[in-house]
Length: 129
Image (cartoon, rainbow, N blue to C red; front, side, top):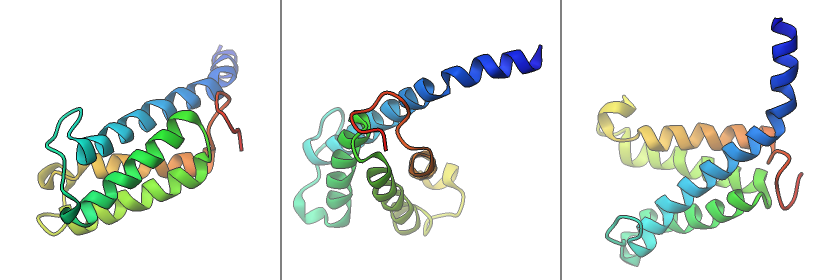
């Protein structure tokens, strides 16, 4: 019974991975567009905001690429690194624990994107490499 369930679930893994990638990409895109354009929540950050504004640029670009499944591994690598830097520069100085320093989204995006570096885009993607 267990083996047949595992086999049936394994058949869906490439499609579910694609759905995961698309949801993560759309969320990442929303965070970036919020920083740059003030939508869907905001206010928009001015260019003078420095690294936070540039993080928004990376989030928008990587979010679009991830959602489409185009250059997934490279976009995920760049996004994961951006979130690691964001956590250690903006959140960790206040407190180590992500739940207390507001860095939980940065940690989750960092590791979700890091997973996509190794798994690739799944079966539904513009470029499946």
